[in-house]
Length: 175
Ligand SMILES: O=P(O)(O)OC[C@H]1O[C@H](OP(=O)(O)OP(=O)(O)O)[C@H](O)[C@@H]1O
Ligand SMILES: O=c1cc[nH]c(=O)[nH]1
Image (tube, rainbow, N blue to C red; front, side):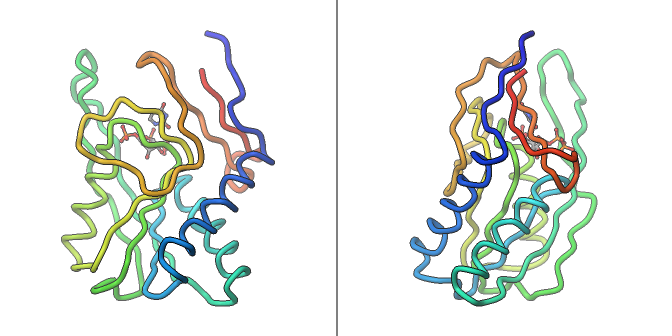
């Protein structure tokens, strides 16, 4: 299958800058916001958003991590079970506005697992979702509040997100 570059380094950076402004605009600032990155690349994206928001507003937004494991237990039907491995956050998220950050939104099962993990630990006032790429094909009633780019895909295609911090280069490709 031919590989197509959907976003280069500059496009990812611009999308994250826009998303930071959208977060600030929609929430009228940073009050009570906690960014929770989904491992692996969601954590780096949450950190990038944090740095942008911090430099725009001159405040330090707290961050944390959720680690989930993806089990394909029925490959034929592409059903997947997502298990939470760890939930690493120092800040109290009760009554806070938690923004889950991930690189790709596809079936929505990773987000559902993340919601379970969050609600097992605390009762945030609000939970939102930020994703760099929304590729469609949802299997659950989940939608993103902040989207870097909507990328229509076929189900046999995949989106690959690479980030400098982890992959030595930043790009989003469709394979
Ligand atoms: O909406 P979903 O169908 O749950 O898919 C989205 C998830 O898939 C990817 O993770 P993956 O399990 O491929 O692991 P990775 O982050 O290590 O690439 C991606 O990082 C999202 O977390
Ligand atoms: O295409 C996809 C689907 C799920 N997760 C990804 O990272 N890419």
